[in-house]
Image (cartoon, rainbow, N blue to C red; front, side, top):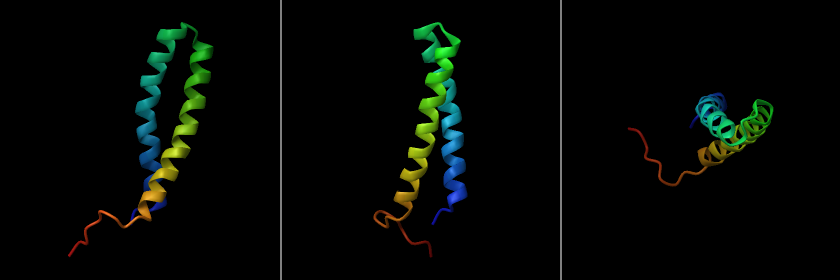
Length: 69
């Protein structure tokens, strides 16, 4: 089973990649750094929390796991 710290770190590193993608896209549409900052920050905080919860829920589901011998 994966530890909570590992799930959290995976969520954060994945969101770092997403931050740069969203920064680029947001600025491309708005041409406004303040709006880009608000959009990117809000979206990524929500995404980190949802991804972490998703990982924790899946860690409790045994379906599809193989035992290591």
